[in-house]
Length: 172
Image (cartoon, rainbow, N blue to C red; front, top):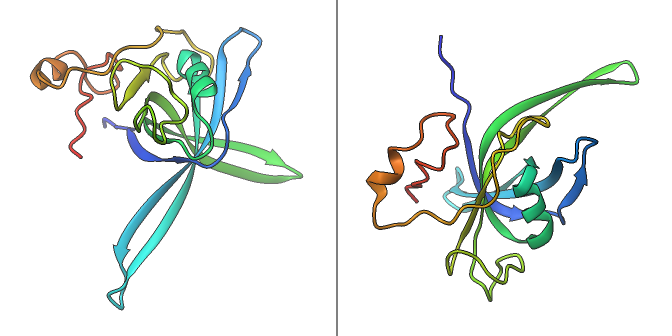
């Protein structure tokens, strides 16, 4: 049976980016993301619920995050879920996290964009990069935000798990 593992999250960083390099020289960044949900409760009042998600970035997008993002910065993450399992003090532990395949910094140059001073577009900047693996091959650096005038051309270049930059249309 086929399977599909894709996550799209938009939220704010809960802490500054933790950037490090593994022995092969590949950059790895760990970030915390707070995603807010607002819904009506049983009594009809609005209830705010925050979900905290740990996200791992690899390669160039990890370096970009370390350089431009700070606590509170709004970002959009597209990636996949990964379950980490380990044993500590004789007890089995596990943690679900997101491995980012694409990252988009949100916000304008002057307001809340995580300190970004320049980029491909006035409001957003997208960084896709490596395969999101655990130290696997590196596919490239930054790419400009997709042109909004030809959405049909964007969809034709990428498929599920493709990471080729196509299909970046987000309906919200």
